[in-house]
Image 1 (cartoon, helix red, strand yellow):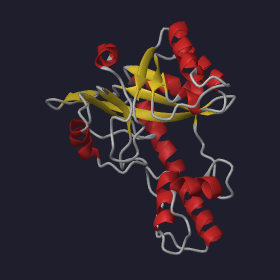
Image 2: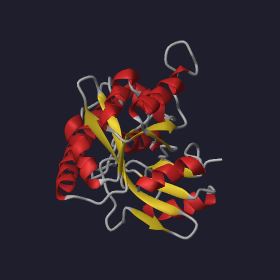
Image 3: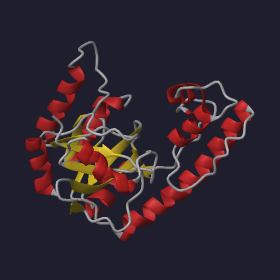
Image 4: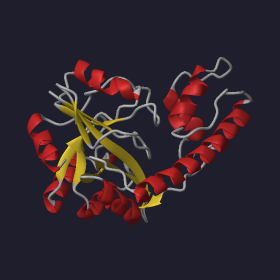
Length: 264
């Protein structure tokens, strides 16, 4: 049974769940704790941790950073915004706005359609993919196909982001958050290189609903993460990485969350 889902996105980034609906959705899913971790955006006036009766709400953030190998995602929990973090997030939102505009134009040109979608803060590629799927004049009925054909990292309509350097991102989150960890380590092209970065972090996601096996051993990926946890004395975290309304697909047990909660 999942006790805490610590990776949830809302309409402030590329999720479909309204921020005010997070706690009720967590309650409906039987969760005792939930973390909002929107991409490159904070939630105004939300304290680091707040008690909503039977549900504890953690203010978090997911920040993409650049390493020498590839881009990876950091998760910060228990956020108290600093001026430096706020300034960097403002810069990233301006970049997201411009990037979104260019991707929308590229897709409209490629498909000869008007998506009726305007660039805005918090816009992500899933928004664009959903607009393509819902458009009556396209043949797409699946978001993943839009990524595969058009807007994925190697797609013809892709536009790269100007993301935060890894060391800068760690410093910004450490100053503003009670806990900083690596998100979904097995999703990256080089999980070993991503996990090696955990030597300066507090935590790593062990539980999420789309583990990618490493090598020929179907359990090798989990063992790789568990080895990093032991080597770097990390706290395991976890969550659904929910972009829809269904929570508790993955997350922490009560004992695992107790260890995280002590840091928050």
